[in-house]
Image (cartoon, rainbow, N blue to C red):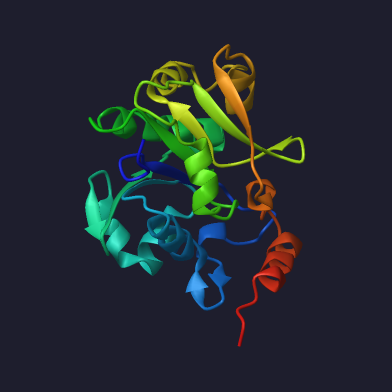
Length: 219
């Protein structure tokens, strides 16, 4: 399967309380982090991104004005199709933000699933995406999970059938956790990846500062 027709869901609806500011609006060597993520994803061959905002959505829309044109409808920005959704109750957690994105994914005729990438995980290499993407349209694992040094990370690939099942789970339920639902699957694949980016969790200022040092542009 091609990456072109597989959408990437980016979850950026969290409160970012430990970071102290919206993670997607952090400056990454002079550029907003969310825009850097978009650029990397596009460079890896993807054409569609579904962005889910929640807390701080007004700040995102103010600092990145073109996102307003992508609210609830596909908008092409620099050869990338983007749809932005607002989770109006982000306090329900990241599972509820994922559920916001499911209907748009299922409406895409050319897609049989989607990748999920939290905003605080850097976009991995193209090789990683290709390893996680089902090899053919008839290959239908419910989920593909990347593993590095025996630890699971992101992005994860979620089949449409699995996404539809996830959409039916009440957000107030104890079952409303993606990791729990993946663990219950009979059809899942744990794929060993040679890319430690999948384990990054840029969740606080120290983690962010350490990451900036690791990725300091060469002069």
